[in-house]
Each structure stands twice: as structure tokens, then as C-alpha cells.
Amino acid sequence: MKLALVTETFPPEINGVAMTFGVIARELGRRGHTVTIYRPRRADLPGDATHPEFVEVPLPGLPVPGYPLLRFGLPAGSALRRRWRADRPDLVHVATEGPLGASAITAARALGIPVTSSFHTNFHAYTTHYGYASLHRAVLWWLRRVHNRTARTFAPTESLCADLSALGFLNVSVLSRGVDTWQFHPARRSGDLRLKWNATPENPVVLHAGRMAPEKNYPLLFEIFSAMRAANPRCRFVLVGDGPLRAQLQRAQPDFVFTGFVSRDDLARHYASADIYIHASLTETFGNVLTEALASGLAVAGFDYAAARQFIQHGHNGLAVPTDRSDLLLNAATRLATDTTLRAHLRQSARSAVEPQSWEHVIARFEADLATVAGTPVATLEPAVA
Image (cartoon, rainbow, N blue to C red; front, side, top):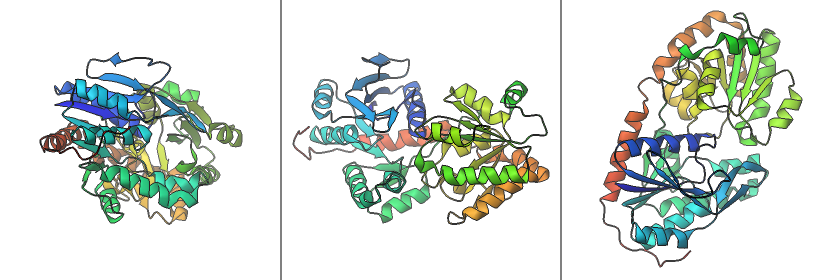
């Protein structure tokens, strides 16, 4: 197939959506498909860029307010129609719901090109974390409108598909997230890295990786970290990533290790060199970090939803607590900080939970779903507007 993927985030940006579509573009290209990525222009991508598996086409964009590490795309309907008239794709897939993604859907429908979408971020839930709770309904309306103009919406888990269907989203299917179990592996554990963290074998290292932003529930996470340190002063805390809250968090906990962004290979070393992973976020659609932590052999505790619900068997390969019981997550975390036997048991069993979740399986199913949609005749539904 000739595929056009439209996304407002893509590697080298570091987040779950960028990582997911970086892998999807690479693997679909390796399977013989012609893949073109349409994304906002970056300083390091001023023009089209050709890779072995795909081509990147930059389009106008602006920094996300308060979050300059990311960019959102501006409407590009006219430019996309010109390109797609000259070189028509078999299918357009839109990964993000911003102005660029919405204009891509309009352009594809106007040209009669099949178009699908992905739901990867609970933006309607984010409104409360950024002080815009009054916009919750409006954001949900926008998300539903964007996705319901596509032939199929993909979401990472069956439970999220059910939630979206209940909210009025149509034609929802699963596009799960794979985990690279070769890259994320306990064998990447590094004694030298642990020494940099001032950690001996007697010091449990608690790792957290991700975007340092309000929706990640850092107040609860740091409350949990304080309880773990009180229960076991030998604990060390390492936070990998960056974001608008980093400076504030670093001022609050100057004795924690803040690494900033690291490469994927370094991230794998950081996971494997730690012992415990606590996942306190309540806004994830999946939670790649949790599966990466499991694959790396960490003792994991988190709320029972998204990836945790799919992969954690409580007490066997991790600890999962109800989403309305933050007190139980704190208790689970302090158990991991103090119970050496439990920690060792969970670490021993963690990896087996995600070993079957290969990207090969995930991409094969997605490929088949896209082929089904691409083979469906689509009439021109709307006039060509920007």
C-alpha cells in the first residue's frame, strides 16, 4: 500500500505517540509499503527527509504554548490536496487530533481517499490538569467530531475502545502497543550506572520515566516517593525525561537524580539498572513506560487500568490497585521499598507478562486492518476546503 501518516509528534521527540508511530512507520516500510510521514516542521527538518523505510514531509507548525519541546501543526488542507492529487495514497492515517490532523481528514475525504485515525491521548482529561476544566465538554466534542469523520478509530486497549464507544465514538478498533523485548531487557543492567546514582546492591533504585507535565500526577508520585524513603532510607530515586515541570520538581527534590532526555538505548540501560517502577498517572491511554519497565525486569506498582490492567497479575508479576485508591498505591510502593522477597519475586516474573507483546504481532494486525479499510470504496463526501 501507499500510506500517508499524519502526526504532530514523531521521533526524535520522546513520548508514547512519537515512539509508537516511529516504530509503525519503520516496520510498515520494512514490510514493503510506501510510507510518507506528514509532521510539523522542526529546525532539524527544514525540508523533506528520506529514510530507508519512510519519507518525512515537514509542514507549518508552532511550539505548543508552555511546552516548546513539542509543536502542533497548522491546517494544511491545500498543501495536502496538492500532494495527494499528484501522488495519491491508498490510505491516510491521522495519529493526532490537532489542526493539522483535522485538515488532513478533510483533504482525504474531499479526494475520496480512505482515512483512519488513532486515539492516543486523553486530551479531554488533561483539561483539569491545566486549569481548563470548563473546556472538558468542548474538547470531548472536538475529539469525537474529528474521529467520527474517519472510517475507523484505533485505540490502544479493549477497555478504552469500550469507553470511547460509550462516549459516542464510532467504529473503534484496537491498535495495541508493542514492546521491544530485545532492547528492554534485564541484561542491560549496568553497575557503573548504578554507581553514578550512588546505589550499591543494598540500595533499591526507584525509576520514573516520562514527560514531566501536570497530567502525569507528580504530586501523588512524589508523596509516594517520600513514603518509600521514610520506610527505607536506602532507596534512591531516578527520574528520566523532561518537560514543563522539571525545574520545579528538581528544586523540590535536589537529592533525586534528574537525567533529562536520554536515547532509547540509554533509556533501556536506565530501566534495567533500577529495581522498582511506580506508575501514578491516571490519564494514560496505554502507558508504554509500564510495559518497558516490565520487560526490563522491574518490580512495578500502578493503578489498575490501561496497560496495567492488560498485563499485571496482582501479586504475581506486579501490583495493581483500584484507580480511586491512591492510598493503596502508596502502600504497595512502600511494600516494594521494604520487602526484599516480594520485590525479587515480582522482578523474576515481570518480563514473562510482556514477552508475547511483540511489535511484529501488533503491526501485522494493524497492517491487515488498514488493508481492509483501503479496499473499501469511498465516495467524495465534502467539498475541498482548507
